[in-house]
Length: 339
Image 1 (tube, rainbow, N blue to C red):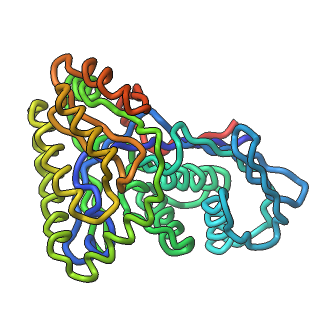
Image 2 (spheres, rainbow, N blue to C red; image 1 turned 90 degrees about the vertical axis):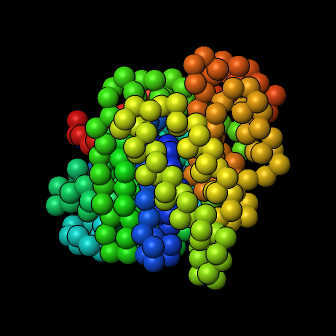
């Protein structure tokens, strides 16, 4: 028997960073995100050898452990170990013996929520296999707790919820709760949006936790420049929601540019000279706005290119050594099945 799962990666269209504690605990956060047809995958193959095997899909990374003990998180399989440890703690029972194989359609630390989406996919596979009584909010919250508390990974809350629920969502974040508001957007609006919203991989990665820790420290130190910037990004999420619902797509670029100016004020390291030059080049070539995906510092960027300007923008960005990524929006979140 094989137990499989997949969860979609996301584009954080507006409000990025306001889902991070302590800002969201104190002021409340607002995010608008959309899942795309790039995924994290997990497969569990039950075994009878008394071992646990973690593998990457290409087989280049493999680690094995005795199945009757807690696994110490270390290296590439931190999330795998963290989820296993929480499962046997929350749901004690028979000793588990299995092979867990995972893969992701995008590079890790690239700004599309890869780590948290992988956590959701792995957790979903365990839920399918062990028939655990967990709904969508439960899965997203548990994935968040494992990453942030059990493993001590710095980050926000949106990625676990977007991967679990899927679709286009306006999310509200508070100290003790998260509210996911699905948006009913016309298919024609989404088709035009995916055509005009150019996704570009800068061919660089970054350690998002360092940037997020600086952002958190700025809030704790009551840095008014950073806090006011986050207030404006929360406002940006509402602006984006209204533009998408009304089909005012020509406003998207301006809204993205509005957010870009304030995102850079949240913490140092979000941008650099290369990313600034890349952004300016895209604007000069016809884009009306854009942003860096995720915490910043590298990874993916995206730009709104109205009309047929996307082709000029693609050509102009070739000098930076990255590449554009084709994608479509997806409505489904976490999916699990057995075969």
